[in-house]
Length: 103
Image 1 (tube, one colour):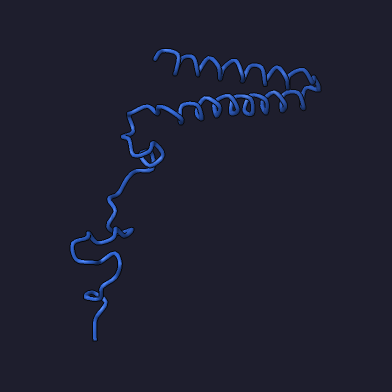
Image 2 (cartoon, one colour):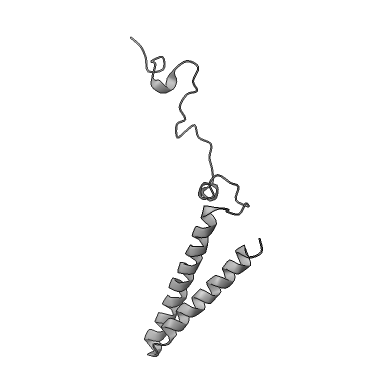
C-alpha cells in the first residue's frame, strides 16, 4: 500500500520541484503585493500610473464634492456643492502634477 508521501502525483514527479503550497510561500507585506512584487520604496510605472491618476481625480471629486454637499445642505446655499467638486479637481490635478510631472 502506497502512502501519500510516496505516491506519484503530477506535481510530485522525479526531477520536478514540489508544488508551492500556501505554507511554502515566503511572506510578503501587503504593500509589496499591491506594487506587483516591487519593494515599497519604488514608484509604480507603466499601466498602474494611469490607474493612479484616474483614482486621484475621482477621489478628489468625491471627497471634496461630499464636503461641499454637507456644507450646502446645512447652509442652504447650493453653490457649495459644485465649488467643492471644483476645488477637489484642482487639488487632485495639483497633486498629479507634483507627483508625476517631475519625472
